[in-house]
Every structure is written in structure tokens, then in C-alpha cells.
Amino acid sequence: MFDEIRKGLIESYKHRRVEDAVCVACGAKNEPLALHVIEFFHPDSIETPPLLVLMSKSNGTSRGCVPLCRTCCPPCAQCSLPIATPRTKRLVRALTVRHQEIRFVHGNGFCRHVHLLKDFSSLFLPVRLSATPENVQSPSADDGKARSLFFPDGEAALEYACKFMACPLGEGDCLPALVLDLRKLPGNDSAVTMDSSGIQLAMLRVASNDGGFPVVATTLGPRGPRLEPGQLVAWKAGKHSEQVAAAMGVKDRRSGWIGLIVGTLTTEHRDGNWVGDERFS
Image (cartoon, rainbow, N blue to C red):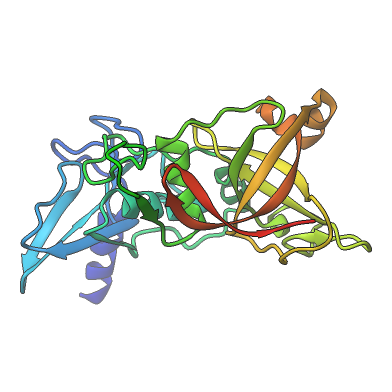
């Protein structure tokens, strides 16, 4: 009996068609959807947003699932369960930014096999949500009042910058960027490397309106904070190099931009600007 229950539970975790549901990440319709990779709950007093799938209500709490299609959350070739990549974590953060009154959590309906290639490639995939946010207000509205937005971490802050802010890219432009973990690349033992002079080298995801692009950058100088994965930093563009773009081994030519990390940023956006933390010199 327990084996049958377990089998039925596993089958419910796999992609399946759900009437009137669409993928939260890309808006795909009439596609099999994974429902238990990301789940949510909120008080009954709050209306469940239309793109989320409400599953139950009890004791004053509504619970449900976030639908994801096979493209945005691909199935494992071995077990057919959805694969939860680092991009899934970024989706949780993006949903949290959009619906701040709802709690999003990672569900149990995902594959437990190791998928190093998919995990790594997902770091450079953009994260978009398929509806216009209702509860996130632009900080650029000019009503004479100081406006601040606070984000739980650097990833959430960068996702907001990619979706709702201008991200001009040219010589001298300064953009927010997220420190990535170099250990996810073969042959690297450190998340961020440092040379004998104290200059740090990090891989970044720089903000852009299509979800960001990867670059490798060094700090402006040896004096400053020790960088860690997940930190929000200020990256200043220098010049573009086709040779660097080719060496990065990715299709995005923007990865050829040579720039400097001029400082770290807090996760507060105030009056149209990110609040600085510590500078490098």
C-alpha cells in the first residue's frame, strides 16, 4: 500500500497538464507543467494572484503551486521529475519581489539526480515573470517624497534591476552586478580569487533588461571588502574586446566587456539609485 502511495505521489510531481494554467516564467499555454518545484502560502485574506495555482485552504491559510513548463523547468532524463536549477532559486526571489505579501518556498517535487551542466548553464539564463507586477511601485515616480525599495538579498535586487530599470551599456556606464561562484567552473577552488597584491577577480552577472550577462572583472584596487557570491556590486564598463568575448566561451558578445568592480552595494534602492556600501581603491 505504501509503495502505491509513494508511486502516486511521485507521479503527481511530474509535468502534467492543468486546465487554464500557464507557465509563470514564460507564459506558455497548453503545456505540461511542474507544480511542486515552487510552492506558496498566504493568509486567506489575500487574493491568490491569477497565475498561481491554488490547491487548498485551511486554518486561515491558502496554499498552492507555481506552474513551470518543460522549457523553464526541464524534466530529468532518468526519472522524469523536474530539475531544480539555480535559476529556480532566482525565480523564487523574483516572485518574492513581485508578491511581497506571499511566502514562496521550494517544494519537494524535483529530481535528486546531479545535473552539473544544467546547473551551470542556468546561471546565465534570464529570469522573467509572465505578468506585470501589481504591487511593486517604481521608485522613479516624482511626487516629492523619498522612495526606498528593500530587497532580501543581492539576487532579488538584481532581478528587480533587470526587469524595471534602464540598463545602458557603454564605456563609462556603471551597472549593478551580482557576484557569482567561480567554483562552479572547472578548475577553480575559490569562489573569488585574489592575487598577491590584493586585487580580486570575480565572475559577475551584470544587470540588463534581458536578465543579465556574464563578465569577469577585477576590483578597482586592493583595498576594500572581501567579495562573496551573492553580493551586489557596482561594475563600471571600460572597453569591449572581441578576444575576451571569444575566450569566455558563451554566445553573448557582451561578455567581452572589460570593466572594474568599483565597490559593493547594499540591497536598498533609494530615489532612483542603489545605496553604496564600501568602495575599492
